[in-house]
Length: 435
Ligand code: UGA
Image 1 (cartoon, protein in one colour):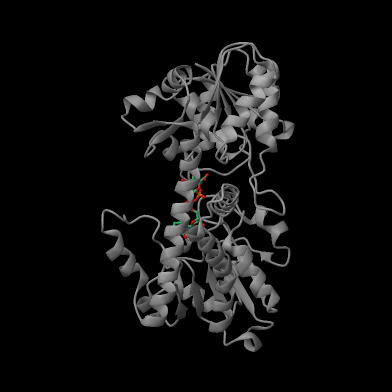
Image 2 (cartoon, helix red, strand yellow):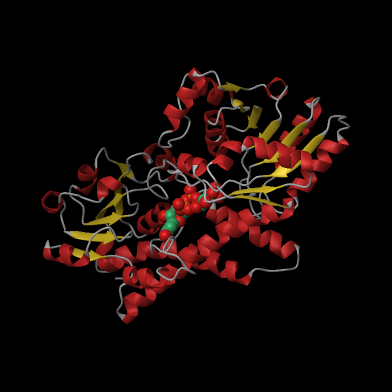
């Protein structure tokens, strides 16, 4: 099937490459000429494990191409995916739908064959109705259907998530849309991946509901971690004990510095706004957002405390290991590292950092932080080490070398990577989360 994917950012590019790998003929479209030229030359605009190879293989096979020309790219396409960004609108937290709507208008202006327009961007409930209205009012005479097909890709594991999904959610209002979407995902159908056909509005709510629930789960265990610290418990053992209950499940119960990234913070905010507009406030999610925000900065205070308080910390040097919001990505959006670094900078602490992939994106966002070329370079002369992101290469640091290079053997492990007893035995002053 011929498919066009509009928006070659994270969602569009991963979806386009995976759909091509299913055997479809896919054109990924973006307005950004620089990005399209790069992609045509085989350069990836983002870091995602496996993506460069997947793109190269499908380009070589003639199934995947890139273009800045939307009108020609949608000619003959039976499915047209919208995968443009829906960032938080400046000032009010609503999802900014201007890109989605302008793409809908552009599609409408060139639509002259039957096609299904599929919203993959994360959009508030009711957006599909508006996209349908825009296309209908453009006066197109082509048959079309507007479908919601939210993505559940995790950065760093996106290709696996696309190809072996827990479920595919398709919000559709008519037979034509249902039949075309069945064809798009036929390879997964054969794999017996559950396909959940539902109404368009339900599909839109499922996406926000899933992210808000996961954000709640993380926030719950983070608060339990605080209680463990005060009451004397080990949050990892508590989480295991809770998660073994099948009704709860073990995933997303890792306590840490608070969730970040391009999705949870913005999607929880947007959901709150939608809920307010419908006169049905989500008080639980309001609390989650508030707790998570204050937690990130509180992690900076945790570092200052272990250094002996604000007086003692001023002028000291701290090494930050890991800056991205999670490992295997170069994404810095809403990373807890930003709040931790800000709190420490505000307290007059000098910061040196290392991250395997995130430093280029991080530097403009944290101009006061000196970037290093290895974890050991960052640690050299440090009065404390803060492990913020659990990249694999931080899991087995040479602790003897760390002790020699650092001025003080102090580690704040915000991801519970190391064993407290072993760290103490190795001579470290060590704190972690909820243990
Ligand atoms: C999230 C969802 O997991 C995806 O299903 C969804 O498709 C995506 O948002 C989206 O809406 O596009 P992502 O933001 O890539 O994916 O990352 P996650 O792996 O979910 O992690 C989010 C944050 O939660 C990270 O900062 C991570 O460190 C934190 N986290 C996660 C914890 O602190 N503890 C956990 O147990 C799990």
